[in-house]
Length: 356
Image 1 (cartoon, helix red, strand yellow):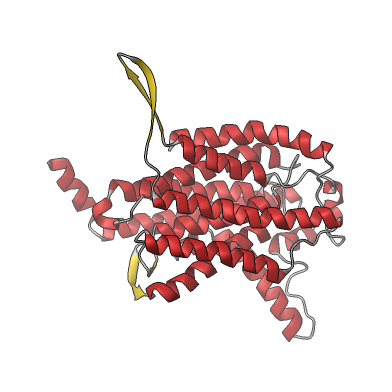
Image 2: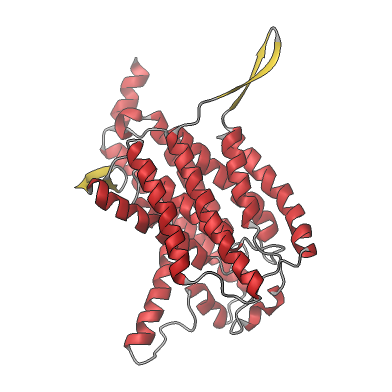
């Protein structure tokens, strides 16, 4: 876990600096919506920095499987076996990142803030989610809806596949919606990924209670996402030197959903990633209000972080307060996770192990 986070952080902290210079030379710049007058200074800021994030997650995860051995014959390396759970989670990150890359490339090639059409993007996301669902079922992942562990509602293979599609596409788009202010998505992702580092490792330490295959692998993937997000945040914090683009937000959102699905904490992600849920709901409420209630707007602009900007909140104030909201969701989610552990006799189990 430490090597995964360290390598991912190093890749983004140094790789992003190189990407900024390279993308400026290639004129790979961000387009800004005309109604966001306060963001016009960001026009032309290098975008698609999420490419580095995806590479960092892959590098960190791969590094976590290397083992340095010092023997009489000298120093050698061994490679720990890759497990299905980790490969599926990384596959979700890479797959959704590819969809985001195509979307970003379309925007750049058309010189406007419109990439893939809704139908084309959704088809791509569903393809990645479908492949993930097949792999999850094949590797023995529980097909029940899970909150902190699987509950009695068993969806079966067919409905589970639909549930996977909703989770992965939903959170990929939710993080994409949230990525509208400097450092908001990368900072909040670091908090959520940190929560899943703890959850994955805790499940690994108590296999008899949770019975999740490859939990340490999932903790390593979460560590890579944590390190990559923090390294990118160094350059993405306001005023941003680079923007992650759809390639980054889609990849990180898909990775979050994959971690939740594979650790059987599907519904807990709604709490841990509460900020993304609120941001998405604000868009839904705005659309419903505008179409069904005579063109009335509930918010000055959606998603909701732009509403507060238009109320003359400084951008850094909005970002900091939304980070606080994200941290509250993470703390509440971890509290619920540990509370379930205590309610399930976790402390008694620890006492028995210690007494032996």
